[in-house]
Image 1 (cartoon, one colour):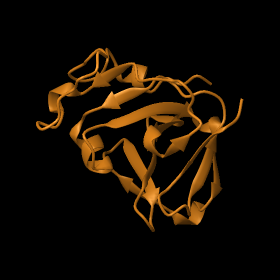
Image 2: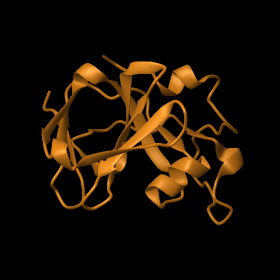
Image 3: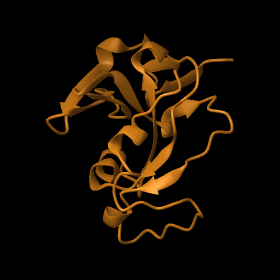
Length: 144
């Protein structure tokens, strides 16, 4: 299996993901919408052992978006790259928008639909959850 690759807009930061992504979700929470400037963030989790920054480590910067979550992005172009969790130090959250080589994986559900953008209508047939899909743990699962 070829690695999944990703990079920021200015291409200063690039990374590889080995193995498969965990379950994919479209997250409509207000923080994901603001972080990505979009109606939702399509995301998956991976084990930290699957993640390798290839170039540009010195271009990463971090923002603590809550007591538990840190967001990492390119300090040159601002592209969102990944998230880490204090309560799950072995897990990394990955936005799929910057990835190549994901294959035919598809989202399992739309989550946090109670806080979706008022101007956006969800038109797919995926299950919808007003918050977590049963638990936060389901969103943080990996396939490692």
